[in-house]
Every structure is written in structure tokens, then in C-alpha cells.
Length: 285
Image 1 (tube, rainbow, N blue to C red):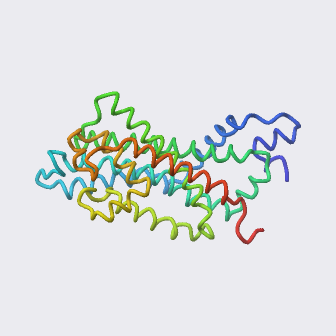
Image 2: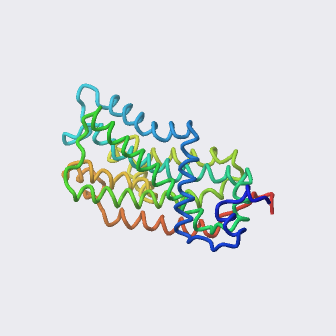
Image 3: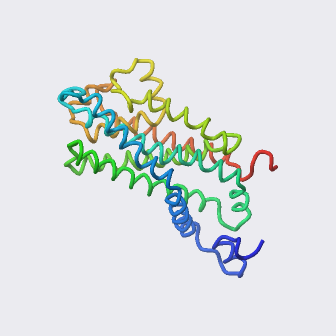
């Protein structure tokens, strides 16, 4: 292996210098991942445009003639939280569950595993890339919702604080679950066929495409097992008036349950990822 094929950490080790710390390497890896993401223009357009397009469609179709979701809440206002949640799902879980198998198939992970780069730095880089993309995506969605659909954004620090912790936990849980799920597809080519149906089903049962209170009880209960429902509910508590909590199955926003479920999926994703992550293809030993 020549010096030109090594990572910065590998070149440092080859010179006999001490390696930078894991955190610093993770930050550098995150910069590399962000640059790589924005070079994939089709992925950039889809991930950024999808929530905006879906919000426009649902707000237009359901909000005809001034129709409202309930209790004076416009449909654009009601669907915005779900679109934020599904945007986080796309940029974290789906993005990593699709891209990592491709990297594995192309041999990139095998080569990376042979360098002195700590595995933790690689995963920190992935989480950093997801966080940057999710922040940009959400900012664009909020701007479009406010400017084109007259959605009222939160006006209190408390609501923005709730937004911050739901967003952070949801992004982290989605990222680690995406890493854990990335070992399930047998190849990079089959990843889309495995991951996309899971994402679609979660969107349909979690109150993203429909008002959650109109879904059958069994579907609401099934959705409650997964993090997307709780992300959407947490975001509804930020963007909807307090009285809209009565529309939830429990009659409240359940912030404690939201935090507990998202943390549980974060821990589960970490455990599964550590136990199942593979640097090589299945046929490569």
C-alpha cells in the first residue's frame, strides 16, 4: 500500500508520529463524509426536497377550501411535525442503512479497516454527517413552511428546547439504528429493496401521511413500538397548540415516554451495531 492510498491517520502512523485523538479524527472524518454527501447530487436533492414536496402535497390536498385538521389547526401546521420527523429518518436511518452496504461492497470499509483509523472515529464521522444534513434539511423545511404556508413557528424558549432534545435524540437514534441495520442487506444492490419498505411502512403507521388520531387503534399501538411515531409526536408538541394534546391517544404529549423510547432505540442500535457490524462482504471472509 503506497502513502497516497492511506488515510491522513495512516500517513501519520507511517511517519512514526503519534495519532491524533479519536474525537479529532472523528471530526475530520465527519468533514470528509459531509463533502462526499454533497457530491452525490441526486441524494442531496431527494433528501432535502422530499419532506418539502410531501408537506406541499398534503397541505394542498387536505387543506382545500380552508379545511383544518382539528381544533382550528391548519393541515400544513399539523403535517409539519411529521415531515420534520420523516426527514430525520431519511437523513439518518435510511441514508446510513443504504450507503454503508455500498461502501462494504466496493471494498471501502475493508480498506478503511486496515488503516490505523479507530472504528469509533469512523462512526463519529457518520453521525456528524447525519447531524449536519438533518440540520440543513430541517432549516429548509421550516423556512418553506413559514414563508409559503404561513405556518406559525414556536415563539417560546421552552418549545424550542423541546424541539432541540427531540431532534437530537431522534437523529442519534436514527443514525445508530441505520448503522445496525446496514448489516442486514446481503449486498449494496439489495439494500434499497430491504430498507425502503421498512421506511415506507413506518411513515404510513406513524402519523406522517395521515392524522395519527384517525388511524386504527391496532396501528397506533404498533407504531408506538418504533421511534418515528414518538419523534412525530414530540414535534407535534412543539408546533401545535397545547389543546391539540387531547387528540393524542393518551390525551397528552407524553414527553417522558418520548425520551424513554428514543433512548431505548439509541441503546439498542448501539448494541446491535457493535455486535453485527462487518467491515468485509459476506463472501470475503
